Length: 180
Image (spheres, rainbow, N blue to C red):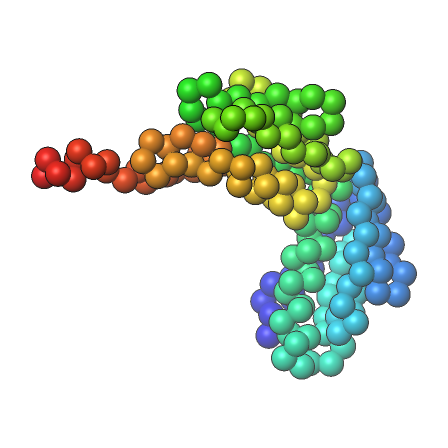
């Protein structure tokens, strides 16, 4: 049995949940998200909470139960508070700027790298910190991963784009190995 799926999702003030068959629409102060829930899962609203339970207890429905609950929980949090990921650029001459709706990265290549930003994602750059924010947790994480993938942190010097607070274990160079 799913321990996560059994937990009810509390609906905060200012958030409206509408169930139309298997489609769930959640509206809040930040925006609106909708999702088609798997047919194996039954969704209902009771006492200001969203409750999920499997229609028939099969192995697949048990696996989807906790997943669907987590996705709905993220939707409720997203329309109420939003999500944010921060990336840090390290390296001499490495910088980022916003031109129109594109993010332009100068990270040691012969050309600047342009990344198109989707409509529902906001990106801001302050010094060497890139902030990706939005209401959909998956899209925010995907956009942050796409930016990081342009120049992942180097294992020897630590230069590149990393998540804020991410620790990179640096490898010793050739000189350190031969000296020992």
